[in-house]
Amino acid sequence: MVHAENGDAVDAGQQKMIELGITGPEGHPLSRPAVLEGEATSRAIRLADFVNTPLYVVHVMSIDAMEEIAKARKSGQRVIGEPIISGLALDDSWLWHPDFVTAAK
Image (cartoon, rainbow, N blue to C red; front, side):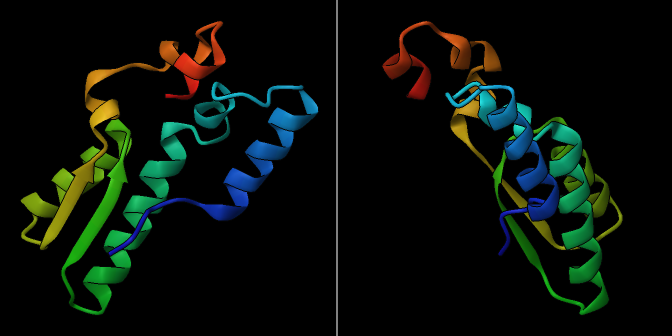
């Protein structure tokens, strides 16, 4: 099981958000663009394939990660992706809501 992120890239993204003064919920997706989740998911899938083990990817939020999982499954690899319900039902616009409590939810 893995929560697929690229820690170094996320750290750099978080530092950039702090430098820009973006410290609310809206900074979360800005510091972790979909391409990073896709890259980390792809890396985890390749490692799981190398050691011949099934893979369960939790907290899938992006189309990039979902496409990597779908590609691996299509090739016969045993990979399951667990989406976050908010990722299926909402877009990032809610994170910019002027009421912090609403945005944070």
